[in-house]
Image 1 (cartoon, rainbow, N blue to C red):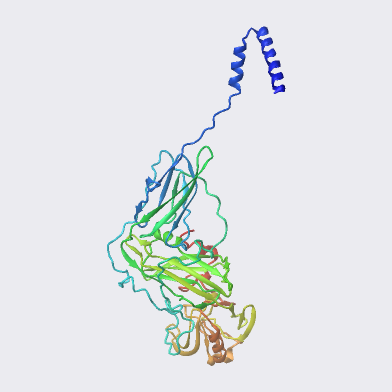
Image 2 (cartoon, one colour):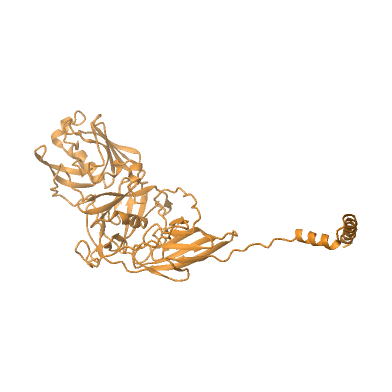
Length: 495
């Protein structure tokens, strides 16, 4: 207090002296000093308002199936928005897209999908009839050989059963652990958010949003939306693999639809799919992989999944295929949700060389067999490139219109649906390791063919080298490993 009084006395004297010298008044000086030292009043932005599909944020609008949800904000900008399917926590969260439309551009309205009225499944069967059986690779037909298997059931085959999932799988995550873990770049703020995928019918979705106002304050919003039941005929899907199958490290996941999935809806379908891998101890594994829409076949669509490299051996894989209520076209929808759980077995790889005429088999990195063989002759060469075991039969009749033969064989393992097999060929035993005399197949003695037959499972890699021709993506219907990784990922609807 003392120092403050001294300073005040000295300041008063200075002001008086100034007044005497300059002709001013003390009141004038005091007024000017007070104005200069006043603190500015902080600017507080008003609470921003959010609309959901054009309605207030506290409402719960019901949208048509196939609609892309839109959230708009006035008085701020969204920095992050997330939409989740509350009925299935294995459906990945939809992070959508943030934009700021020009003031002169009208705000887009939600896009609904038109639907038909037919209640029949596109296959002519009721939607409840969803159990089908299929051999691994059974959806393909050879061009060289007509199957006439008469032996025991195919051990490499697998039944394909659609499993309805009325509730979410316990402990499942909403992200696809079998995809690349690259962190996406932060998105620019925006005043309009649009979901990446169209919403499935008959579902409830929850959304959360973070926004910032001009004063820098952060605001949180949340709400729910529901969707009307999807209309139109239902379409079934089936898996070539069956639950609890044990497969090789190159096994693709193959899903065949009963009709066409229009391109404009493939993003919505693929967004909902997840593939999760765990090791023998149940710990999550990060395995990079991608779905790919392969060319439609016989008026039906198909989507395959393969990893960038082979699956790790002894891995458990769990696949969620929530198709129910998802628009496949303007007048068709998925019939029901499916799940698929299978196991990757040991790593067994075949290397067959047309140059050395040897077939070398390794298991978990250790060589177990090195056998002389005979591959395709110069007139009918085997195809270089990555093959996989597709199916097998104890007895199989090889036929070819082109070469004019019909030959019974034992222990036939199909490695491509262009007619290539590993099989017993005792008639060519003298040529094994010496010359290539087959019509494209890998010939072994019956004894060696049986050993290999017993060991082979769907998805085992079989690589052929040293021949004069190469596999192409058009060589057969299961040519997943012929694509380069870049080519494969370009076939994803999310690319």
